[in-house]
Structure formats: C-alpha cells, structure tokens
Length: 564
Image 1 (cartoon, helix red, strand yellow):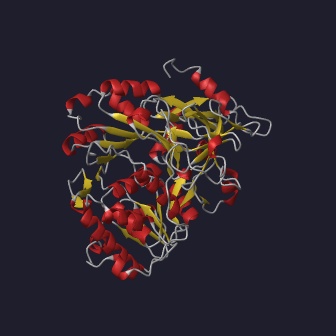
Image 2 (cartoon, rainbow, N blue to C red):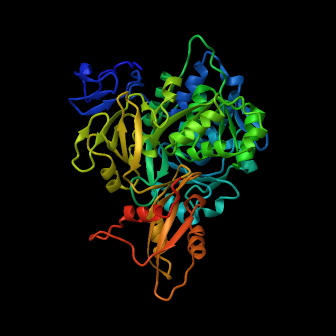
Image 3 (cartoon, rainbow, N blue to C red):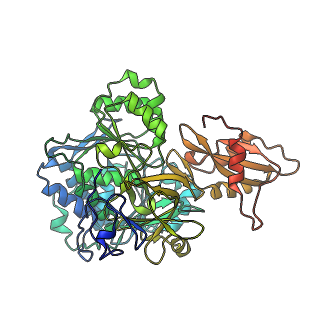
C-alpha cells in the first residue's frame, strides 16, 4: 500500500527525502512520522474553543444537518435535533454565565450517567471556557473525593442519584435531572454570539480534566487543552473516509461507551462535528443493545474488545436484524487477531476499525482509515495526523527502527498539557522535548502499522478501563487480617484482564477469598473489583522492595488453561 510521504516537521525540517515512505521512519532523527496527509490547524494564538469549532463546522456544512436528529435516548425514545441542540446549548451557556458567574478556567466536576443533557452541558461549559471534569458516576465516595482534590472544582453537576457523593463546593451542585436545570435549556432564544461575544477562550486553555492512572500509582487528572481537542477533530475531518464516487451513508452511532472516558468523550465531539445521529443507552445490557441496533438501524458503534467477544460468542445475535451495522471502531484495549477473525466470519459486512490511544494522548494516536488498512488484523493502525513516534529500547534508551520492539513514545498536537497538581508525575511522563512515554511495548511493521506487544506499565485493563494495582494493594494492606498483598492482571476472554490478588494472611487469620473480594468491592467502582484471590506465604520482591509481578503472573498462568 503506497502512502504519501509526510510533510516536513519540526524534528525533521529539511530531510523529507530521508523519511521512508513505507514506514515513516527518519534515520537522522530515529523518529517515525505520520503517513497521513499533513493537517493544517488554526493559528495557535487565535482565540477558539472546541465548541466554537464544532458549531462553525455544523453551520458551514453543505449537508445542513440542523434538521437531523442528533441525540436519542434509547430508553425513553426522547430525541433532539441539531437545531434544538444548538439552541439549548446557547440557552444553557447564557444561564450559567448570568446566574452562576462561571468564567474561563473555573472547573466544573460532572458526575452524571449517560443522558441527552450531558452533551449539552459539556458543550455549554466548554463554550464559556469552563474546564469540564467528568468522572465515573459509579465511583465510590473516596474515589470521587480524591478526584475533587485533584481538579479543585467551583461547581458540580450531578443527578439525584449521585449527588450524595459530593462535598460542599463554592457554587454548589446542580442536579441535571431537576426541573430547574431543564428550564435553563429553553430560557433564551438569543444566540451566544449575540450575548456572549466577550467570552474569549484561548486554544492553550485547559478544556477538560479526564482521569487516568498514568503509568503507575493512583488516579491522575489529565489536562487536555482546547488546542488538543481541535487538533484531534481537525485530523479526523481532514482525513475522513470519503469515496467521491459513492455517497456516504448518514451515520447512526450507538454509544455504549461512557462519556466521562476519553474514548466516549472524543467520539462525542467527533460525532457532533460530523453531524451524526447518536443513540445513548442509560444502562447497558447486551440484548438491549441488539434491540437498539435493530430499532434505530445503527450502522456505527465505538466499542471495546470485550463487546466484540460478546458479539462472537452470543447466540442472541441471531434473534435481531443487525444488517444495518457497517462499522465498529475498536479501542480501549488490544483486540486479539483470533477474536477479530471470528467476528469477520460471523459478520462479514462489518468492518472493524482499530485504533490506539491514551487519555494522555487525547484519544486516538493511531488508527485505521480505509477498508485496506482494516484488513491488518492485530494492528492498531498507523500514526494519526501530525503525530510522531519513537520506539525506545527500555534498557539502552536507543530509538529503534521498524521491526524492533521497544517502549512507544509519542509527540504531537493532541498530547496532554500534563497531570494537574502533579509536577513529578508530569516530568516522569513528558520529557523536555514534548515526548510522552506511554509505557507500552510496541513495534512498527514495514508498512507503518503499529502493534501493541505488552504493557511495560503495570495497569490492568478490565473491559477497557484502567485498574491501578497499587491502589488495590494499598486497600488490601489496610485490612487488619492481611499481612501483605500484590495485585496482578489475570487473563479473561471476555474482560481482557481481571484483577487478581495474591494475599498473605496475618498469623491466626482465616480470611477467605469471598471476604477479601467483598472488602475491596465495598470501596471501589465495580470495574476495579478483585475477581480472583490466591493465598501465598510471601510476596516476591526485589531487594529495594518492589513487587516482582512477573513472577506472580507466571505463577498464576501456570494454573491457567492453555486457551488463556
């Protein structure tokens, strides 16, 4: 597959000809460059919010999507058009500005399950330059408290079911399922352009603080700027899969992804910019999802690998008409080639578009863009627009060429500003030249496709969610009946990985597997639960006291089935 050679970049300004057109590798700088066409971005000093960019795209669209449906609640069948979305976003922006004196760089903490109101809230706050910080509504009170300590919000938005987890804040908590909030959506017919033209948002301003565990330790707040989001959306639009000889179908997307997660958040922004119809599910269940696909003729779904496994294994898929499905965008965790092959056998009309990204990269750092690329099963695609990469030997620090494995480093306009309130973690992850150290062991093949081999970092990926072992270990060690503990990833066909605990009982203790799991379940969000426990005499550690996880993983796998 031929690819256009990338334009000169900052790291390789005068050596375009030394960049391999197949891999994107530059021998002089030992850097991989994107094989996608260069994407022009607005001048960095031009005031522009992500909301302004998306709304300008909608208003300038030749297809004029304002009459089309934007958001549908699958549970209630309630829907709004793009015209209503624009109007309600304008109205809410005016109300929040007038009644709550919210201003640029204030932080709003958001603890809400999926609903039509959430996208309106996001776009309104982002228009005002207010930093949104959405979190998992299923998070425990202690987890929410830690997140609030990181982002230091002035105001919170929650529902009547989640508000009890929040402390008192300077501007209080607004319930988005209350009549008072809903009235704010329809108070004004004026546009923000008319009444709020004094609001100026710089592209360098933080737009969102999303939560990630980084490479190690407790949850961190990832600061993504308006510029990060503008670069991401611009890249997707600039290289959108369009065949000039074939009209593109109107995309009807079903979101099973939470909108507080970077994957769901970025997909929401992209869907709005493209004028898609987005169907939301308040609560996910597999058969309910199949019913929604049939009812609304869904043709696109962003998914994580466990959902593809469910498609492959479930007999329920035979009960519903899924012929409208054309495309699955898969991310959040690696998808095995065997599962992808089995899916293609069962659903030959559906393409799987894989991608790779972190919260710290603003989502998609690599992806596939056409049917030919989608055939590269097992890969996560090629470098996204304007992105650079290095494959660095973890031992020597040497940057490696195609075909060799090392830690993936990334640099580009979507890379985070840093971790809020944690300069040490930021410095450990972002170097002085702007390279983000992902902690993932990867390689590029000789066509520029990236493959994820393993994680150098210790995060467990449960259904695409990040579970930091250290957090669970600290909780286990707080139990008076437990002397020591270590948590490792244990392979699971449906979830990808599950947290498994190795526990050393205190002398005289008879704590059981069930008691251990219950102890953790009471303190963490459901996806962080420990789902397997083994008791051991001592935890293997280095002389410096670091847990030898690989030894424990090997021990666990020696008892696992060969299929795993």
